Amino acid sequence: MKKRILSALLALTCAFTSVGMLTACKNEGGDPSQKPATDTSINLTDFTIVHPTSLSKTVRTAIGTFGELIESATGTKLAVKNDSLLKGEKPDENAPEILIGATNRTDTDSAAADLTASGKGENYVIRFTGKKIVIYGADENALLYALRQFIDQYVVASGKTIAFAEPFTTLGTCAPTTSVLSNLTVAETEFTATVEPRHAMWPTYGRVIELKYNGENNGTMFATSQWADPSFPVYRSTNGGTSWRRIASVSETLTPGLIGNWQPHLYELPCQVGDMPAGTLLLSGCSHDAENQQTMQISIWRSFDLGKSWEQYTIVDTGNGLSDGMYEPFLICDEDGSLVCFYSDETEVSKSGGQRLVFRVSKDGKTWGEKKYCVAPTNQGLRPGMVSVAKMGNEGYLIVYEMIGEQGGPVYYKTSKKLTEWDDPQSKGTLITAGIKGFTGCTPYCEWTPAGGPMGTVIAAGRFGSEDVTTSSDLYLSFDLGKSWQPIKAPLEFDYAKESGANYAYSFGFFTGSDGSIYYINNVFPDDPQYHYQFSELKIAKIRLDGFASYQEK
Image 1 (tube, one colour):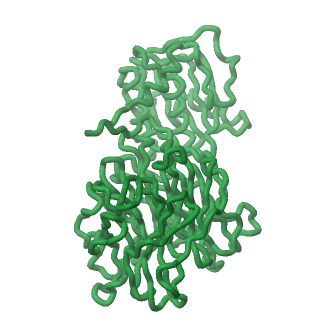
Image 2 (cartoon, helix red, strand yellow):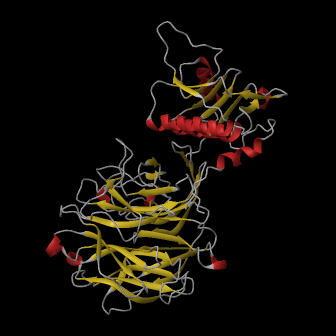
Image 3 (cartoon, helix red, strand yellow):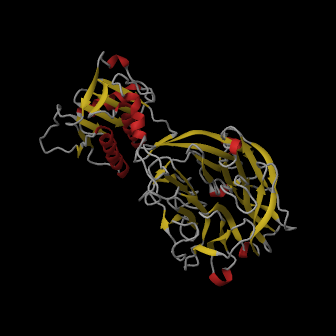
């Protein structure tokens, strides 16, 4: 039995048990001269949250979250209303109000004017003037960040009070590397780094892992990719992903005449499988003949010495070239400790007429059971592909995949309580979208982290953010195990000029680090603009999620 706990809010308020502790460490531009010598505890009972009449769905949800967090901390449930007035009516300047966003109140106008006049690049303001608390942002993201800062810095979980000096004005900056979601979880890019520098071989299919089952070596990171070389490169980082070194090349050895260099996937065994102990590193990939017409196979290599040497030890499936082959293997262990390999399968084109998503199971990691289907639509032209899988704590599994037969190759998903039991394979699943503006398509990947919310956070995305496949996709986050999605700006962006022949962002990867952060690896522009559309670089970004709750297991 799992227990989801809401603990972060109480933890963050511990620092403010004294009302004399007022300065927000993330705020900038506040004027200490505006603060009086004594501090004040403000009773919230009579306050009302007031917002503009017109709100986006994201801001409306965020205001609801804001009220819930205040109630959780103080026991006070605040009334919420819009700022509309009857004809001839004027706002009550003495009414206790928390003004959120661009309301029609003079206190909001004054705070916004101060923000504009500052000229120091700040993009949000928090102000207290006696009866009014003003929370304003120059844009939607800055407003959400200001709401989060207000909760972090001024809400006290003691009685029905919030604590700050009066009056005060604090100006601050939400950095471009920071996004705020409607549940006020902050997604912040901590750093970006280069795995493979400027390269003419277009290193696609970037994959990354962090060791979690290797004792004193936990935290070591490994990465790989596909490129125009007859092998898979293996990179290692021992400093949290900030710098990388190539340590090995992995080649086809079981089948003479084949080249092993397509669509790699890295995996660390979390448990003993056959004769392989927990912590064994696996690399799966596709091998093919030089003309890509006669033979294809999905193989797995293994390493017992932290990636220094590799042995090709099993073949999962075989086919007959591009017109009758298989692609994009993904490895994961199920609840019973068996190794499962998901992949795209075209070996039944003569019978089914289209590509399907399938999986095979191995109890010993060497011999494989019969092929089973997870996505096999009756519409043969849909061609689902590029499946990836996320284990969502103990809440089940989620798979994402492209539907390449539809405009833009939109990304769909399915969920299941068991890794090897999916709904009707003929069902094409559910589209990942954030509403009218939401789109992500082609070469998708997904991952889950316990950070960000009581159900953790699923992160998923495709290559493109528009149906005309010209712009990079946002990253899509779900705090309810895939039922709804919210986009954030991707830290590794690109734009796609079809005429250039560039192959940017062709299949990227995510991985959850030991601290709950998401590592995101992709091949994108070199930093120097003169090399755009000529070369690419394999880069990695670390995204930290700071929410008010995290998924907890008993």
